[in-house]
Image (tube, rainbow, N blue to C red):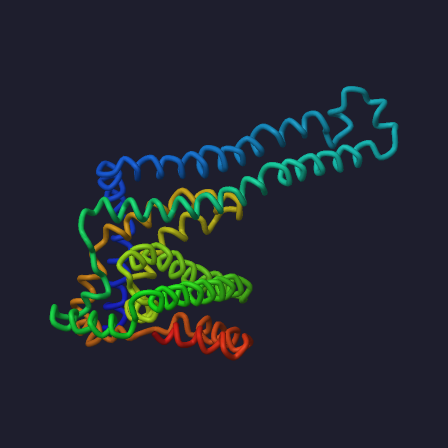
Length: 328
């Protein structure tokens, strides 16, 4: 019961932090660039993308059903019913026109939105981070000030400056992309598990979105990948709570509508994570949570092992380089 209670407190703390959307307004008031970029994201994904879906379902499809009916009583001339297969032809024509609408508008708009939104999300996180007005260390403040300085010095000793440090950073980014891609496939696969699949899918999605939200902040703070994963897996109830509103907003809609809603809400949660200091407070009380039974949960265990197996398929010299960069 103590473990459940401690985990529930952390989960509620994460949920509370995710719902602190007033931080978005504060940051937007501090930065005009942030306000403009956030507005552009709303315009593209809300007004254009979701608006197109609304027009399709509310105007285009009903108009097609009126022009190309599926019952003889709705035809202007009942003589057309005497022609064999006219209703089947109308049905085929309706379906073909709708598919053309998807092929020449929705799918190109979907791809365009993904590419442009990805760029805008990084800008939004950057402007939000700058609007904070000061450096906000997160994982570096896990223990006392002296421990922090020792950890930072050790970290700087491990990572060389100059070209070597740049190459290690690139290696971390490549491995991070591979790890999260495998984790995404893991999330997708859990949806097909009978009975408990939906619950697992919801939980893994919550963790995935929470990680993405905080990853921008950790990138700006130059937190290494292994320390990110260790911190994330150590306080997994907090991040499960933080990611729950993200998933709840899209879990009961069709894929296209879910994407549109998530594309609008995601930058808001990124800014909420950027302005959050709760993870620092949790880190200061890590021994309290350990004593309460909150242990590290290997969320990325499967993704990490699959990623390392995929790296083992590379040529030996490239594989050693990637493994060295991950270790560093």
